[in-house]
Length: 136
Image (cartoon, rainbow, N blue to C red; front, side, top):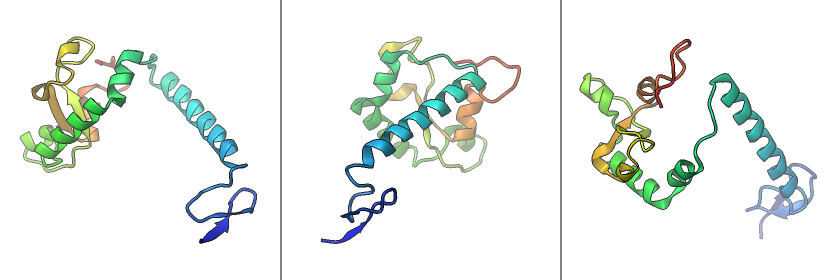
């Protein structure tokens, strides 16, 4: 079995592990704290409110992840907005045309989805524009 050193305490650990059993919980706790701090800072900076737990659970669901993958595959991972302008760009986001907050029953309707690059998705939601309201 291949062994290596834990980067935190220098104990000998199996090569497939990142940290020893003693350090892993400490690293996980520090990571969670760092993520919470970043999220709070992000929410404050961009005046975001906490996402509805119902919507958050949906976006973590297997159904959504599967549908998202199908939609991206159908569009050959090309941004629909850029494609309409004659530009080729990589789509990494799948956007609900009618938001799930307005039409929960359309959340899994593939015809209600658009593949977008990060830039177009931010534009659609009016993100990062100072002085302009967020549209959802």
